[in-house]
Image 1 (cartoon, rainbow, N blue to C red):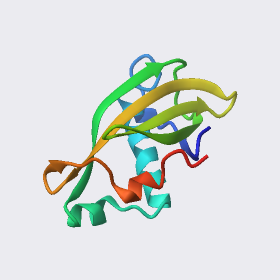
Image 2: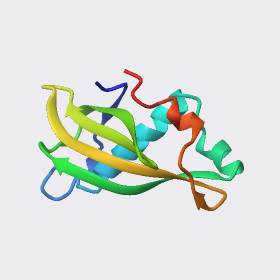
Image 3: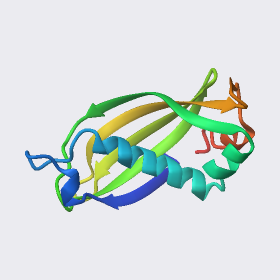
Image 4: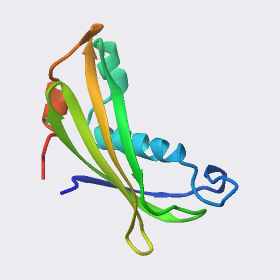
Amino acid sequence: MYIYELELKVRDYECDIQGVVNNSVYQNYLEHTRHEFLEANNISFAELHKRGIDAMVSSIEIAYKTPLRPCDLFVSKLYVQKEGVRYVFHQAIYRKADNKLAITAKVNAVVVINGKLGTSLPEFDKLIDIR
């Protein structure tokens, strides 16, 4: 189901007073995974921007399942679908030690081309459902 995986490690400063990863930090993990995925597929945000193309997150839904703690290794996974003008990144993070699900997320992104909402981008279209 997932087409890309990235292993990361929780850093102490990402945790709150309760000793778990702060909820907002998960969005950083998700974004880093998407950027690494695009880079692995030879898609550069900088190059797209030079061409007047900007990919932007339009909304995010996150379900928190099991907290991550300092020094936990985890695997961030994703796959992409197209829904109308949106590219939907389905993402999940699993704690590596026991493969326990930490979060699931649905990240909706749109493409703006020369200041106008685009309906499609060939570079992104090739990433859809490549399973």
